Length: 179
Image (tube, rainbow, N blue to C red; front, side, top):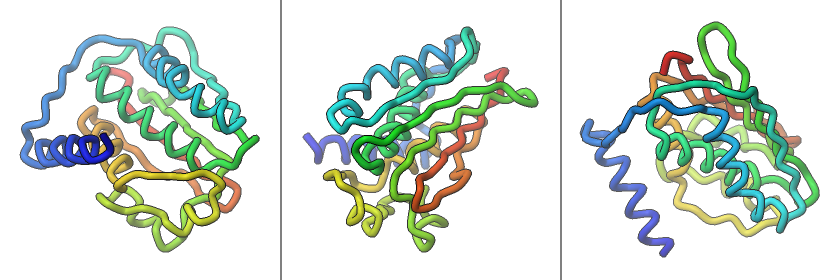
């Protein structure tokens, strides 16, 4: 199963590189996508006693690929939960500012090591030093954040690390309100 997921991720990135990745733009509500992703990860978060808090306004219309946007938000949430210690919190906050939606995903985890930070969105990059300090078993091929960034860019947006320290990390997704 894990190998199939890695192959699927590689196939998606190869198609994206070739400009052949299918993107199905349709009207949707970003708040609903984010709320659905939050519901999906609740069981994982609860099993580690991590609180996931959601702050989103109602009815945030957007035009995009709902499945890809789900994947982007789930990748961010999965990482935030994996790298946060038991009993901590993950917060999602969606705002509208200057013609853009800004989604902030903040965790209280171990942060991203300084030497890894400039490469965090590259393929196969894994913050193994951070994994050693985490109290959870993390797995992955180091493709999630590169896929998440590609999805953001495919929607004329950006995905960046706003800050990272031993007290946690904050990722910011910026998308044009017009979609």
